[in-house]
Image (cartoon, rainbow, N blue to C red):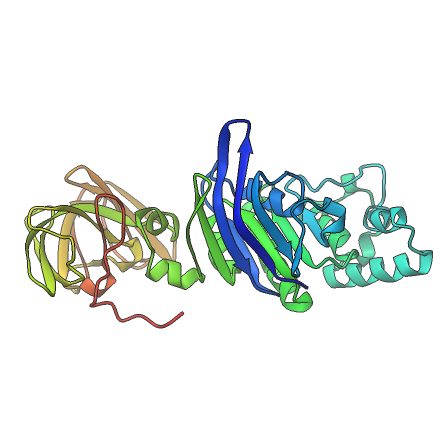
Length: 368
C-alpha cells in the first residue's frame, strides 16, 4: 500500500499539451476514480503514473519516492487493461503465474500466490482453462488476479469494464469494490461512466481537456459541483439547465425570472452579480415532482414517456430547452399532455455565464 502524489504534471505530445499542470494527492488505501468525457486525458494521466508515458514536466511520487524517471517495473504498481491482455495459449494458472516466473520466484512461492489470488476471485475451478473458454467477466477476474499475485503497492485500472455487458458490469463493480475492501490497497480507476465513479470511489477526480475540474467525494460533487461542467457530468440522468435572468438583487438575495414568467428568490452570495445578468438554473431530474408540491413550478409537454417499472422518465422542452423528469414508477403521465412539475429552491443550482457555480445559502446539506 502507498500514497501517490502528482506535482504540476504536464504531458506534451510534440507541441500538443494534453495534461496541463495536474496536482493530486492520493492517500494510502484510497479508491480514486478519474472520470471525464473521451479525450479528457484520464487514461494519459493513468499511463503517466504507470510509467507507460514519459512526464514532460513535473514529478510523480509513489510511497514517498520520486518515480518520475523510474521504469514501470520499478514503481510497485500493477495495471488492469480494458482488453484483459491475457496470453491465449496459456491456462489461467499460467497467465497468473507468468510474471512471477519471469521474476525468478520459486515454484512453491508462485503456487501459494496464485492459489491465494484464485481464492479471493473465485477462480479455483478455472485454473486449467484457457482464455477462450472463459466469459468476459471471468477473463477480467483473471486479469485482476494476475495483478494481485504481484502484491503491488498501487492498482491501476484503465476502463476495465467497458467490454462487458450491462449485467456483468454491475457484478464486476461490486467485485472490485469488495476486492478493495479486502486488500486495502491504493487503487486508481479510470472510466468515462460516471455511475461507476459514483458507486465505487472514495474520491472522484473530474477531468476536462487535460485539467482537473474538481476533486471530492461522490456525494460532495453531486450536491456542490464547482461549475456547470461537473454538475452536468455527475448524476444520471444529467442535470437540467434553464436560462434565467436576474430581475433584482440586494446584499443577501436575487430575484430571478424563469421561462414562463415564473419568478424565484434565492439567498446567494451576490458579489459580482447585477440586474439583467443572464444565469443558468440547474435542477436534477430526480428533484422534479408532479404538481405544485415544490416551491417553484414549471410546465412542459410530455413529449416522450419511458415507463421502466420502478421509475418513469418524462422528456419535454421548455422555451427550446430539453428537460427530463425522473418520477416514481407509479406516476401516471400521458404522452402529449401538458404536465406541471415543481421543485424546491433548496435543490436548485445556479451558474454564471462562464459556468462558475454560485453559492446558494438556502441549501441544507450534510458535510462530506
